[in-house]
Length: 286
Image 1 (cartoon, helix red, strand yellow):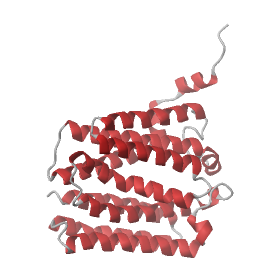
Image 2: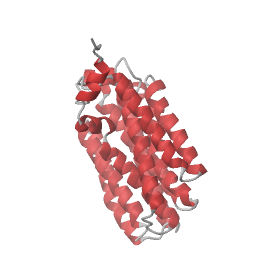
Image 3: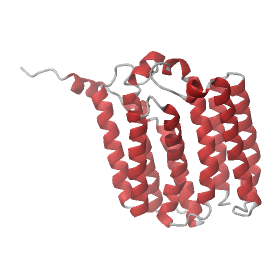
Image 4: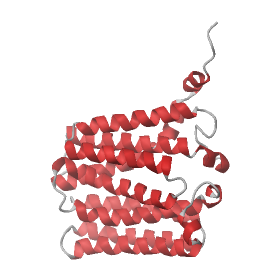
């Protein structure tokens, strides 16, 4: 008689929606679009060629790997939070999710190989960092915040590495880094109760008031740098400048919501602000 394989049964019972929940496709699409924007800014033109497809695909896959491996290592926390994730709900085995993460990382690195040495190197380094973030920085989440923010900002650099022109992208990297640092710390506020005893986050280490202040400081740095880029002529697009104003307003609303302990609203404003920032970056091409 054939032995029952619980992992095999779980694998077969998983639906397409379960897989999508694991990789969070919307996050991966946004990361892929950010890489495309970096590619186009570097090329000084909107190129819809094979390289553009590969840039998007490589970043999508590496990002998806990062999402899956995070679910694997965050299983206990997700159960505490009663998160509606395939692994936490028992719809997938930990081994399946871990294997999927490794497969996605490998696929993303393989695709990046066809984009040149620098793109390949960035894909390898970011895959290792994203894996390390989930596997080794659970007790020091404040270091993990930097890794995730770096990974998000590096999507621009990854796209630009295919062309090799970093003149504008280098400067755009910094406001994107600091804005994402704020967003990552806001996530820590949302997960404060679930993280207790399992992670050391900035609100735990610095205290709630100081961590909130740091979020505000990082937002201000991001905003000042974004306007500085225009003021010094690095970017001369009027559309970019005009889009910075609503972006700034949304980030300030995020900081205000955080101050009032409306963590979900602060996170929502933060996400909207990042999307507006990407739109401003895209407007450089107009």
